[in-house]
Structures are given as structure tokens and as C-alpha cells.
Amino acid sequence: MSTELTPQGLSADTFAEIRARLTDEFRAIYGPINTGPESAIGQQISIMAEAEAQIVQAAQAIYASQYPASAAGRSLDGVVQLTGITRREATRSVAQVTLTGEPGTTIPANSAAKTSAEDIFQFVEAVTLDGTGEGTGQMIAIEPGPVVAPAGTLTVIETPVAGWDAITNDDDATVGRPVESDPELRLRRAQSLQVTGSATVNAIRSRLLEQVEDVTNATIIENRTDTVDAQGRPPHSFEAVVVGGTDADVAALLWEAKAAGIETTGQITEIVPDSQGKLQVIEFSRPIPQYVWAKITLDANGVGTYPSNAPALATDAFVAKGGELQLGDSVIYQSFVGPIFRAVDGLEGVTVEIAISTDPNTEPGSGDFASANLTVDNNEIALFDAARVEVTEV
Picture 1 (cartoon, rainbow, N blue to C red):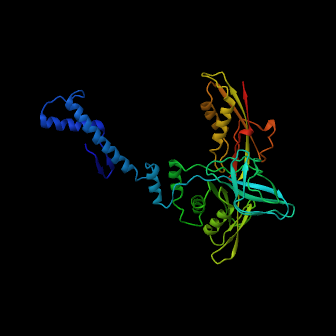
Picture 2 (cartoon, helix red, strand yellow):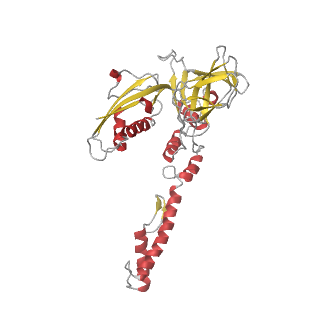
Picture 3 (tube, one colour):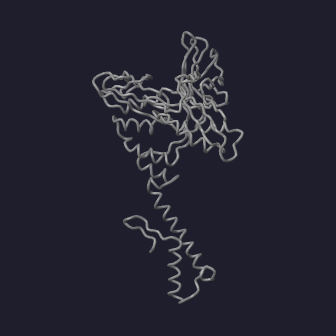
């Protein structure tokens, strides 16, 4: 056998096969010589075989780097560019905020505020306080990646503006994400093969994910009937539910990608200029937050050393697992048991009871908690926070 490129792919010899071939070649030339691993000739053969094996491994790596399923790192970056996409850099967290102060005060774009954890956010657009001295705006984290801003923590004005007195975020910020991993990039490549199209559900979703900065998830809900649907969507319309990205950027893409004569619908309204300068109304939605609460019971009578910080470890494991859920993913209570067992040694048992609320500060009643799954609709997203987790040790 030898290393060669065949119609079935790259056929490559192993070190053992290379050494056996070289041994046969030496014996063919020199006769019945000692080629054992301890002999001088045997060691020479092994050195030669190792050098050739390294060349073969390099050839295998080059061959594998041509295909999405086997390429990695920068090689994968090059492969996916053939289909018009690039690896996503880390995205930034986005927060919806409420401002108060003197009526008519304008807070310029890029004005900053920070959380109690010193994470700085900037305004996407200028905000003008209304006649009652209130206003709402959208802010984006300066640092890319998963910057967390739980509800009520974005409260420190970093850029003083006369007439601007206070700021807060009523809901948790939509958390950014780290640089796209190789498995995520492979999956998105497969999902984005229709990115150059328009009008279809898959094409619109793919373009939102690929072409709008900081968008991390999206779903498109259609009403193809001639009547208003049960959720109030007009006939022949669609609702885009989008996680991340600025309102203006999302609306601009939807106007470009939607089919002529098909209306958009949703909770957010943006005005987009078309190619002729006319103003067009585009509507879409952000996910409806569903705040998950948990009561976790740890039975510490198992094998192993039970750590003193077990409640904190269990809480972190619960929140981390919950953070993996995407738009429309239901909460499967049993999926949290394994991560908690892996995070906490010395456990014999774990009980996870969960409940859900629409207000991050209103805990469900004790009768609402159960070891049962929580259903999340396709326009909702389950949100997790350590402050909503209670751990009991028995």
C-alpha cells in the first residue's frame, strides 16, 4: 500500500505500514539483516518511517482542510467563504432602557451608561425625553461577547448630559455571544446556503443571521391565510422575531428581503427609506421574555467529596445550561440534572423544580413550581439568572 489520491479519496499509509515497506526494501537490497527496533538498521528505518509519516499526516490535514465537515480554524474560514459567508465575530449585548429627566432633553447617540458591574453601554441613536420627562432607547455594549446586564442594573450615567437624570433597564439585556466556534460555523453554513435568495422564510431568516450585525437568532412566523390568525397577524403577512441587532438594521434587511405585496407585522415599527427615497413601514418583534425560576434540592449523601460551595456550583451549572436555549426552545427540566451532577461532587440525588413568569422580579407562587417541562412558544425565549435560583441542601 502507498499514500495516493484515489477516486475514493486520500489513501494514506500508517507509520507501521511505512516501516514495514521500508524494512522489505532494506532486506531486498541487503539480504536477511537484523531490522529489529533495537538494531542500528532498525532504528534508521524507524527514523525514516517517522519522517515519511509526518509528511503523510500533513497531506491528510491539507486534504481534510478542503471540506466543511473536516476543516477547522482558518481552513474552515476559507472553505465557508466559497459559499459567501464568514465566521461571526463576537456580538455585543443589547439593552432596552428607560430614561428620565427634564422634558425635551436630547441624549446624543453614543452617550454611555454602565452597569453595577462596570460594563459600559452606548446609545445606538439619540433619545429625546417627551413632555413628561421620559424616554426609551436602545443601548449596545462597548465590549463584544457575553456582557450580562440583568434587569435594573444598567443605572449609572457615564456621559453626563444636562437634563438627563436617571436610566434603567426594565428587562435583562440580550446577551452577546463569543466568536463563532467551528461546529457553529459549519451548521450556519448549511443553514445559509439560501442566503442570496429573498422572499422565502429560509432566505429571510438566513439573511438576518448572516447579514445583520449582532443578530444571534431569528424565526419567521407566516400567516398565509386570507384571514387574521389567532395571534392577530394580518392576512398574507409574516412576523420576524429577532434576537440581537439594532432595530434599524433589522428593519432595513426585512425591507430588502421581503416579497413585494407581503406585509410585515410585529411589536416594533421602523421607518425605512426605499431605493426611491420613499418611506416604508416595517414591523417585527423581539422575543417575549419568559423568566425561569428554579428550586433545586441537593442530596449530599453520594460518593465523593461534597464541596462547601455546592449551591453556587449548582446554580452556575443550571444557568449555564439554560443559556444554551434558543428562541422558542422549551425548558426540559431533566436536562439540568446531568450538568448539576457533573458540577457538584458527592451527590446522591438532585431535584429540579421550575416555574416561569413574565416579570423578572415577581416570583411564581410555591404551587407553580414542579418537576415538569415548561412550554415556550416560537416567539418567546426562556431567560435564566442566578438571582432566580434557590438551592436547598439535604
